[in-house]
Amino acid sequence: MTNHIHHAAAIPQINCRGQLLSLHTPVVMGIINATDDSFYEGNRMHELHQVMAKAQQHLEEGAAILDLGAQSTRPGAEVVGPEEEIHRLLPSIHAILNRYPTAIISIDTWYASVAEKAVQAGASIINDISAGDMDPEMIPLIGRLQVPYIAMHMQGKPATMQHNPQYGNVVTEVLDYLKEKLAVCRAAGIKDFIADPGFGFGKTLEHNYALMKELSLFSSVLGVPVLTGISRKSMIYKLLHTTPTEALNGTTVLNTIALLHGAHILRVHDVKAAVEAVRITEKLKG
Image 1: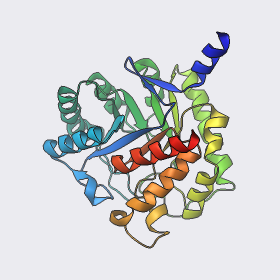
Image 2: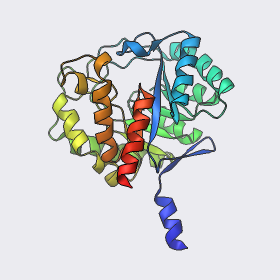
Image 3: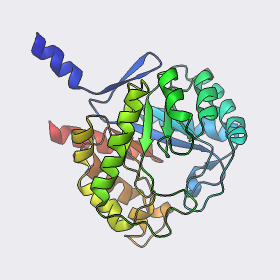
Image 4: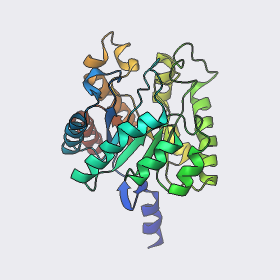
């Protein structure tokens, strides 16, 4: 029996306000931007009915998590303040949970004040591209709220991060950064920590592929679930000399590679394609 218990503990699951989400089979997180400034024009929406239509589509196509953001983090995007984020996010959270009471909503923000209001409104995961670096209140707050926390590595700030990113060894530096963040988060009482290497955030094309090649290290070294966000990013369309609009096929190829390298959560614009990639790779793993 002890063997069985040990095995069960090894299956990563995260506690989303009392709903246990198993990551034993990888899950898909559907992106919903409550902004008209997304880098991918198919994902720009600022009307509530557009947000609702996207939420419905994502859920019907098999998304386990809806990731709601009100701030574009594309390189060079203008920064939206916390009041404006709250103004854009809260109606969407209420509307989604009113129609889909069991939906698991993740909030993409680096402001603690936004995270707190969003969780009070019913969101159950905080996805912070700054891993607490932009707001010193964030990590202590997550420890108090006891919600899963996605901590991402980024070099620099969104406005300037792609100017000239440099690393001695990108894999060990990103890994070390996330290892330190994990220790800080554990000390703050955060139980569910999800690591995100931050593809495209202060990384060149070469850096991104070096990270992808060694992605399996992240969950094995850190012992936590890993999220990858590569959907329609420049590591795909610049390599293929296309545009974000034409990058779905490349996204699916790269998501498949991420799954084979141990990704637990795929953050995507196109849920159906990602769910298919999960089903195929799971069958392959047997």
